[in-house]
Image (tube, rainbow, N blue to C red; front, side, top):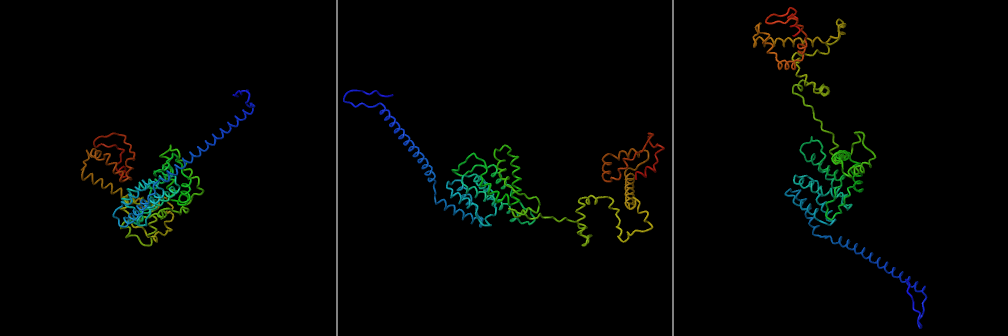
Amino acid sequence: MRRKLSSGKGKQRHDPHDWHDSNLRLLNLVSAIYSHVQSRCFAESTYRFALSLSQKKRTVEHDPAVEERIKSLETALLESLSKNPSFNSLADLLDIVQSTRDAQQISKAIYAAYRGDEAARLVKSWLLTQLNTYVEFLTGLLKDEEKIFRTSALQILFSLQKHLSTAYSVYSNSSNLLPQFHLSHFCKIVSALLTCPPSTRCDSDTTSNQSLDFDVGNLLYETWFSVHDDVRWYFLLEAATLLNKHPNHPTLHLNLLSILERLTTFPTEPTELNAWWVAEMGNPPYKRNRSKSHGDALNMEVGESKKKDKKDEDEGSDNDDDDDDWRKYFEEEPVAPEHRAPRYITAPRSSSPRHGLGECMHRLWRGRWFLGAECAFHFDDRLQPDYPSFYTRLSAFLGIPFTYNILMKHPVLMVMIHNNINVEVEYTGDVRPASWDWQRQGSDLL
């Protein structure tokens, strides 16, 4: 709104256009000053915020006494492993790992708890109770915001896997034990790589991101997964178990796919399995020698021992069943090979399909005769059969349990229950049908 100017004498008269231009210049000046002040305030607030963050980061106490305590505890731990009095130093180191805030001190503490010579890597019973706490902290570091923690934790976890797997076969007294791959520890590694739990380190940025970091996946693939066959086998085995156990996990299948998609080659023959993270897994399996009885050892000659062993392995457990055969009692000495020369007199008979079965049939006949004689002796000695009540006592004696057991023991008697006898006339007492020829039927039964 323009202001109306007075037109009195002695006063200078101003042009309205000049007044409007001056107002515009004043407004531009005010707006420039305001924008400058606003930018200065924003820059100052940003500087104060950054300064507060840097001051907050610098306020983390870097106490040199903690580093001295870590070194002293490490020395005490190595001495305790050699002298075996106590493992309290390891517990104190774990307390420092979980409570300290400084990144450098955490790095020194986790390596102090791990470092040691071959004698220090001996897994003691007390160490196993504290190992889960240490491993749980290391698996959380795989998702830490510091890259050095992620790679160091993965290297320590796989190094522990080798020591735990080797300790079973190296420090055991027996040399025939099968190699072992410490599955309980390896399952924790695979679960941490695929599910990505948050880091439990103090003041760590625990985000909800459960994706596998690129540096961790790359280190896993380049160092272990694509190189060592045992790590790849057990990793795929445990990954399948986790997929079935957690079907609704948001990122488990994506993390597994990010590892598997890097594979370019895969072993297809047993000869290609030649790289092992646990060296004992590459040893051939221990073969147990087949034990032989004392009688076989005495009768077997040195020249034919290998041939007989091979034949026994092919036949398997069938020989054990043949040892219980009743026909073994009627075995005759085998005929010498030189006595088996063909004779021209008996040559036409050699083409008969029943040729060569005479000895076997003879043994069967003798077995039936002895079996029938045994039954007749049993009837005459214990039952004392008089003719009028003989059939009654016989039917009471031949019950289902007796019949079943004797048929199981002597399968050749199955012909007795399958022998169809046409009895046309019912009889009682001592009267028998005329068509029943006792001599013919008795010979069939025996």
